[in-house]
Length: 408
Image: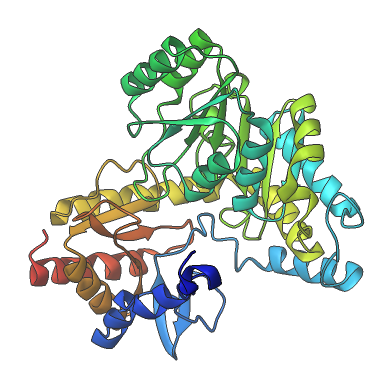
């Protein structure tokens, strides 16, 4: 006979117990250094208001400064008045507006691809695209520094995931050889960020395209931080390297240069048609609201008609690269408006962030697990509309705090 306790079964461990035991964030809150979920009570431009304090924003992805552009705001407002505040359904059923179709047609033309498909968020774009294209016999080759949405999309697929060292094409080739030696049966999908969102460096796309052609692989480039920023016309990493015809799919988002919300994928018509009918994240999610679609359309028009914005963005970017390096800061291998200021120690990072905040600078503290241990950093990013006066204050503040904390 079994003991009475086994007959009745053991009581389950409380699922929420781990929540009560996790105190790391509360400890940082108690110390006064908690840098997350700060409520902004103004437009999220180059000057924001937090708890009644005006701050210079160097922590957003508003690269072209279009979040506060009156033309974009008016387009969003007019569309909301005409169509309402939402679509109350998915693109697959009742949630497709003529605005969505217009946006997709203009995106495809702008990106010089056959077709485009708009998702509800950039995160969902990667989840839906990757998971529906990759089957059980397929292999994904993934840069170790890729965005979380790419990693989650890979996990949702049925394919085998193999990682290669960050932007290391020799390691990509090594991993591909392992895959081929072990009896490759399906397709190969190489996935990379175009601009890496923490490091700020650019993917080595020319070498990647050569390797992909040699092995018969397809490439997906996540250009969330590249479109509007890189390339002669702002079309992203592939245009930057003159390789548009060599990249299978390019993903983009509206939450950065487009000053809106949503995501999209562009590529050949057959592949986009397939994704449209198999991506669960598209089929089972409500579509972006009319205001967001209209804002993205207007932002796209401005991106194409005002190249001087991108020129000014790069002037500001190069100034901050030089300014921070001249002060003695380590800003890694960044080549873009994403500029990581390497600090190292977690507590020092939090303290420096707090002093920046107290002096009216809104930046972002990034600590493990978002980065490797002892690699904590202040993530900064710059826009076309930052003024010289604002950038001077940022550099002056970093100069004083770098000496205070001994990180120069």
